[in-house]
Image (cartoon, rainbow, N blue to C red; front, top):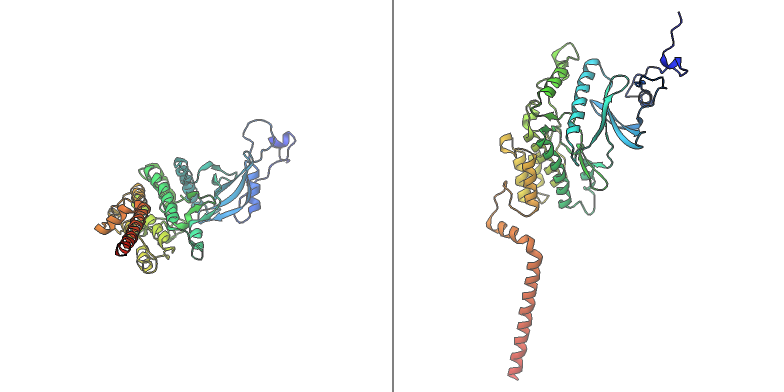
Length: 384
């Protein structure tokens, strides 16, 4: 029996073959994105998709990010798509990717990568489209400073940290916790722009719907034994060296803004010392050891120590509090984390006036010298 022609063939257009995406083969991804079904209800040819893949920007455990051309607006974008996996794993990846896209949609801030579009590919896998970022990661920026002459000034490094903290503080204000802050998840552009990236394991506080969806997806077994469960209540989400103790203990679903504050403290240590905490290492121990070879201002060390406190209640409660503390330090005001001595307070108060004070001292010294020379000459003339 001859197969009856479909609607496209009936009007003289070739039938579109079914395409299965494979992340290992970029050409097949291009084919899948280039062909979409006609949903207009009219007898029109199959339309080309808006996003045309060019190459791979990066890969992670959950998905792959492609550099694509937006053929409608004529610009390059980044498209993140769920990795091909077993149905159980793919369901979890899709749930996380959809949660990440919704989180990015609600975080409209200059320091957070904006999202442009989201949906599903012809094969059913979830994807979203975001701005394509250009530049280097904070890790690469700081690594380059090890051999740079002159090195990046502390004021510039603190400016980068303040911009990161601004984005995290905004997220906390919106009820979002990142849970994986680290130098590799911060992009620094050629013109100084700073973006916090990779919100794939972020948590929305007080969002029962998201928590329920993620828990349901994560409860799927990928094997026959409990050890093969994709994630569970004891799963560790984050990066060793930047995870708060409570997060490293596997309490990922209960951590709040103080966990991000801990990670920001580890970033502060990295910015101050130029060193990244080793996996499983203690950022506070790194700060102590580096203090012997790197000059760390006492107020900044106190801020870092408070961020890295093992008790979440003893840290800054959220990114906004840490941001205020950093701004106080940079403006020359006292910080809450450090009790300064009388002499330190005097130096801090006089610091904004140091140029005027130097000029005043120089002026008075010159007057004294002129007066001394004048009195000497007067005495000499009187003796004659």
